[in-house]
Image (cartoon, rainbow, N blue to C red; front, side, top):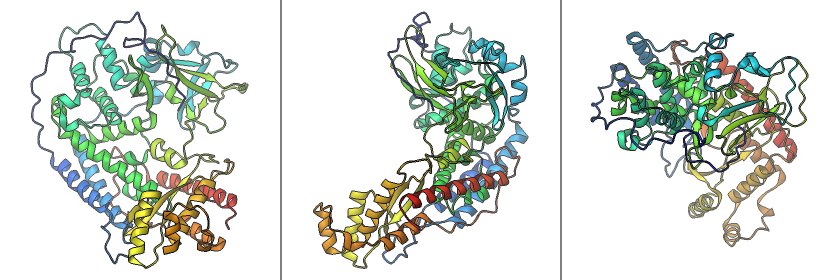
Length: 565
């Protein structure tokens, strides 16, 4: 989100030379060997089988010598059915888990942000921010709650509007550093043991040695909500209870029916969302089968609904910040600051992590130069960065309603064959080596990023050049390939025409690159709405329509800049 400027760091946990150094001794005695994990429940075993079926269904069939051009395309209907089966298994598991051990109640932002409510006290005690004395206030916005300037407030650009020390953020490494700076507990701390194991999985549980930092942070949130530590050990519970009760991130909350609506016009986004769902479920099953889980979640399995919610929370709110003596980047959630919504051009604040010893590393948020908000109740917004709408949907769960100068869509351009088997094999090999092509259904396909945002000067020119090169390469005969292999840059006019190139580009931009077949909705097994994880289908359809409109604008911008009809 905001730019970070890295400066020298000190050798203490918080960056403050007056703070206590990290303890050189472990948080607790070496724990006994972990107990063996219990067998999967019937519902979890069914989910594992459904996931295997989904993974198999998501793989294109291997190419054959006489394959049709679209033989490597994904079968959306088959994947939709496999997703539907997985949906049913997820809902059955969530229902069974809820009946045995109800998950923690969902967050209640309205209650958390009430005057003198839990968040006000949390900000005062943990972040040293007294909301009653700030120039901003927390109010409902179009996207839940947001930060608004108070009536009459007029902060200047050189005056930080909001500051949050990195040591006050919520991150796995940050929590471990904070815990080690506390006085040793009088008795073994389960939370300290959990953190120690989570940050040394290569030693404590090799089955989870490759657990991604995003999943580690999600697991930390789940633990804190399921088995709340003492507030002195974990002060962030009011913050977690102030977060949205649901997220719209595609991989965590979209049903089979909703996911497959992406396939027709956004095949690569569909593939990313599908891969995200598979990875998420595979990670969850890996966790609940691990000795780590048996040790730290002894009373009941980690609820799938809670893991999905925490994953959506982390995907949409995490940021990389410098931490520790060497300023290494770690993932963290930033209380209060992460409530600022996105604005592409009308954003009015900028953020940066600064470190000027002896002051600790701090995220500072200031008004932009030249911004003079005079309107009462103006919302404070930031720019999430140059992200196309597909990324905003996948990782933040929303689509910009208007123009997005950074918008783009990815297309797969097929490298056409000549019918000469030896020549086409040579051409395919050259395409893979020099153009980054991949094999789809026995054909070489080149991925081209088309940036057609209306606000971009010259947007799409590089993509147009790449598409033209791909088109010409596909038409090369033996003499043409000889010129190409010699590295000659000129003399390829005979292999193209304006009309043929325009037809090819139109075909590619319609998604006829051989990546995903079909495109209608698939999958009849939509998970039960309200079952703890599933976004309303109508809301997903609205988001896909917004994405379709953005893609049309992007394609129109690309066509107009390159004089295509």
